[in-house]
Every structure is written in structure tokens, then in C-alpha cells.
Image (cartoon, rainbow, N blue to C red):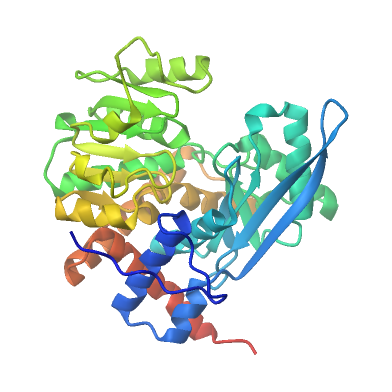
Length: 431
């Protein structure tokens, strides 16, 4: 097996821990930058975040106590436009992880050629342990602390892990109260009633589906003859599973943090979605199939494996067990660079995250444009625009991979980094 080189230190002389999300993001960038022959100055400029803000803030709890929370926001790049990226509420939110996710957002926006840079943010919290009032208070205080960062022309947040349209509505309202007038374009992924876009909730899963269909078409494989395993059954995995099932694919295995379920003849996805809704968004125990573990799902004998959970799921210790011929990265960073080497040697096509899950940010861009114009499109028009952008981007990445004789991930990275580097060169360095 090919051994990848260690990454170069950051400007402060540190190197993120091997196997961490930020380590993976930097190693992917370093490989692509070296392949492109970027000059050292441009490479250093694109490698580092533009700005970072960490805040510690109090929230008054329902029992009258005061509890402190830590919030983070990272802008990786504003070269091609305002920064764009989700906010997650999770106990394991970490500055290095947020840096990695912000970097990937920069490349993701560039791959689908929308005028954004990358950002990411989060709060270290388990929202399941908060009441709705506490969650609202936490969201509003975090927003207020981040007023230096947020803005419709500077940084536009969106939902991510454990955040949803309601959280986005609270952010929009808080920002608007500070400004003294409604600013719907400050955030995307909002409810329709306050300026959200039709098609936004399903957009990431629809984009994943578009990429899978393009991959199958290139292999001349009928959707009806395709079996699919799905890791993660939240907004991305459940939508992709439903859309693929509607096209005739057999969804033979699904797993999430609670466990998994399998059925050789295909799971009833509408029934599974209903079961998950009734059981705390968990699929374990679904009566329409047999139980399986997450490890068994990753090694399941299916044509397509959709990774729609969290980072670092397929790594050097389990990549050899993967039997799927196509991996669709619905999550950010689910496959490590070491795993990429193994999967490529095993002739497994990995549709990289910065392409595969870009449907969400694409429709977020549509929502932002609609909010700025106060003019809204139909769901049919949204989906048509999304599918055109995703299929065009897929074709560009695969053409780049064939032309340069490189893996699709490297092709997506080189396309994206070239676009950002070209914009940086045209803008120049201020002053």
C-alpha cells in the first residue's frame, strides 16, 4: 500500500494530530497543491483560515442556574465571495474540526462554482439535554456573540449537525433585532414562512442522488439492478434513500448511531422513515428487517455505499473490508486519506464530499439570492437548477480525473483550488 507523506506544519509550527479531521483536510490540500505546482506563497495563503472567533457565553437554564458554553466560527476564505457554512450543536465540536469543515466548504463552493468562500461554526453542547427554551436562549446568545462574523454580505450560516430550520429562524430573528429590520438573507435553511426556499431541506440528499445516478450511468448500470447501503438516516441519508428507492434501487441496509437494519429484498423506506420519526430519529429495532451493526454496514455487499453520518468513518483499519464499488460521500470527510489509497487500489469509486454533498450549499445559494431579491422560485425550478449544477459539476470533476489520470477526489480538489487561486491572483494582496 502507498504511504502518504506527513503534512507540513501550520504557520504557528503545529501539526494537527494524525487521523484528525483537520489533518485529513490539510493533507488533501497539500497533495493537490503539490500536484498543481502552486507557488509557496499562494499555497500558504489558501492553507490557513482567514479569521477565527471563539467565544464563551452564559445561558440561563430553566432551573435558574447559569451555565457556560463555548462557541466557534471560522472563516476559511472570502476570496470568491461571502463565507458560507453550517452551524452544528454537538458535544464534540472542536476548533480543528471546524477549521477542516470550513476549508472543505471553500472547495465545495468552488467545485460547483458558486460565489462563496467557506466557513463553519458550532457550539459545544448536547442539544438533546436542553429544553426548547434553553436551546433558543443558547442560539440567540451565540448569534449575538457572532455578530462580528455574520452578515448577508460577509458570512451566511446554515443548518448542520443537530441544527434545523427552527434554529436558523432564531438566528435570523436575533440578527434582525440587532439591526432593527428583517434581514432574511443572513442565514439559509430557514422555514418557508420566514424566507426559506422550497427544496432546501431535501437538497443535499438530492445532490447525492444526482451524483450516484451519474456514476451508474457512466458504468451503464441500471438503477433497478442496483443495491444500496446507507450509513446515517438523517436529512441526507433518508432523502437519498427515498429518492433512489423511487427510481427502483434496492436499499438493502441502513444504519445510524442507534444500530442498523437490513433486508435482502429491499427495505420499505417510507415505513422506515415513519418508524425513525416515531422512535427519536433512530432506525434500530425496525421490524421490517434484520439487525446489523455499523461495522457490518460499512462492509455490506452492496453496489453503492452512501456515507451520510459523520467524519472519519472509513479509515485505514476498515477500508479493506468495504465491498461497495461506489462510495457516495453525503457527509463531510467520512473517508480518511489513508482509506482513499486502499479504496483506489481496490477499484472503488469514491464520489468526493466536496462534490457529492454540495447540493445543500447550492440550494442555500438559491435561497440567499431569493432573499436578496425578495423573489422566489417554484420547487420544480429549484430542483431543475440544482440537478443541472450537480450533473455539470460531476462531469467536470470526472473529466478532470480522466484528463489528468488522477482520482476523483484529487480532481475535485484541483478544480476547486485552481479556481480559488485564480481569484486570489486576480484580486492581489492588499495593500
